[in-house]
Length: 367
Image (cartoon, rainbow, N blue to C red; front, side, top):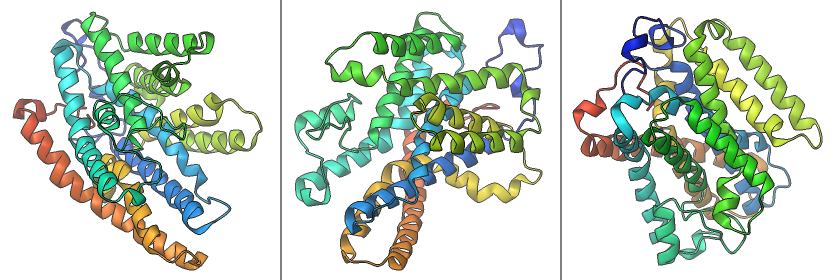
């Protein structure tokens, strides 16, 4: 998923953009690139496990922890939006960058799923392709499937529906002249609070007032801490990571722990550890950084590769052979994501955005 956030009045004050906390010379926050891939691959593993439960009758998903990758994505998105948005360049600039980053690949894959649903519906479990579901999917409008799930045709697009709604909140704040990142945070917190107080039998209200929106706000909060107090992060990557792991394990095994503690808090702490990540030899991370670039493609395309390979395998596949099949599926997912990144993401961005917008200043490589 702009220029420097410094205004003329504060240009003389050192800010996070001027400091080398986890940042390479080209402006890319290496830790966050690695985290993007780690979160996406965790979701891949989760769907390998859950898919094999369905296809092969396994009782346990050994990769259930991978679902937390979605929490990490939401926190990461809030951080990146706050980091890369320059209010001085206006609402249209913000919207254009976001749409060009998200829409092309999503539309390509959504149309692909629609074609599969019309030609080979047996390959798609609960997905029904109609003009209405296609229209709502392409425009990021949440709708409820017959099985009760609020998912578009490209089922992982439900997370993009949250993303686009957060972008809309952020853009509206910019349009109203509310330039502080705290403005969209307050809107999110107010919306979620109203969702707990007011109960409407409405899919959009139920979806948009979900507590999951708080994770975007947490990401913005981490950005504000990073921007104002970068020394809090310097040299503390291992400390944050250890605390995140301990928090995740503790809350996952405690009964009736609120989601905010069990999911959002560990994700936020983990992201803070990757913000602080500053390797001494960044060149060794070249592959992981590239995989981080392709993480959006990996996230969207992987369920269909996993499902296709599992459907052509024998129904009584043994566990050792399932491990081999899962490894092959992961390799195919990564290879496909790299191809989509090169052929769809990069080309669409170059075609739809002027070169002036593609030349990102310091700190913008994550946009």
